[in-house]
Length: 288
Ligand SMILES: NC(=O)c1ccc[n+]([C@@H]2O[C@H](COP(=O)([O-])OP(=O)(O)OC[C@H]3O[C@@H](n4cnc5c(N)ncnc54)[C@H](OP(=O)(O)O)[C@@H]3O)[C@@H](O)[C@H]2O)c1
Picture 1 (spheres, helix red, strand yellow):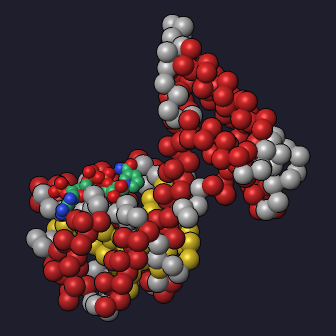
Picture 2 (cartoon, protein in one colour):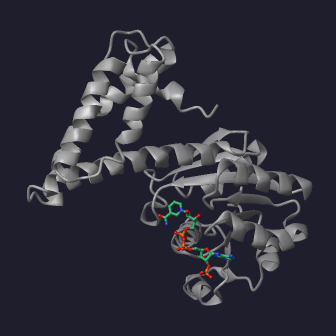
């Protein structure tokens, strides 16, 4: 079976890497970019350039969208709906889960097979198995586009709820964000003694590396649902976090990143859960 033809809409850092990889793996590619000059290196390398989104959409079986944001996707795909009818659209633009579902509903209304994607990688990783790309939505669209998608990295179908790939992306990015804030806090505290950021980062890396397996143990407590395993308790953790906050302030460093943790523990203690495993904190996160 010949490799599906592919159009790439958007030639920023990520879109360019995607278009290059598709071309290099034998897919006939057509590219479009708002700033047309960015198509030139791709044309020199063998891709076709389209002057409009409609022309780009008509050129291929699979249309891969790699624009900056959801607003740009709506702005560009909306007027080309008729040209996209019957095509498979794979949207790699970072969006929220509800934005992904909104685009899926629009696509369904216009007879477009729609798959939402999330790229867990930077552009230089595209094409390497270490690049993880999550997809959700129309499973037939996934099957149709799969030969092209597998060229980009490790492809994973997350489920038929179109928002799932994006949700997982956001959850993993949230974990990364909070972890990196940990680096910031430690570096800020140690910098008050003259320690370089590099020296502290090295220590944080070693410490977090040793602690990472603990995350799965905590997850098992959450899945158990009783929070009574006799692990580190809310009351024990309250003293621990209070010390972190005090030590930080003693060094003249704000403890704003740590304070929410203390707030949730205090709420648990005040509602009679001082003896619970501290990870019960997760139950405080649901917006009521
Ligand atoms: N870069 C990464 O490491 C990375 C990793 C994972 C996911 N992503 C996601 O991939 C997507 C693209 O990122 P990128 O790194 O390629 O960004 P980028 O280098 O800033 O490129 C943005 C692209 O979007 C286009 N664009 C922006 N607004 C537009 C509009 N209203 N109409 C038409 N085109 C518009 C730009 O066109 P012009 O050239 O005309 O400005 C350009 O092609 C983002 O959603 C990003 O979150 C990126």
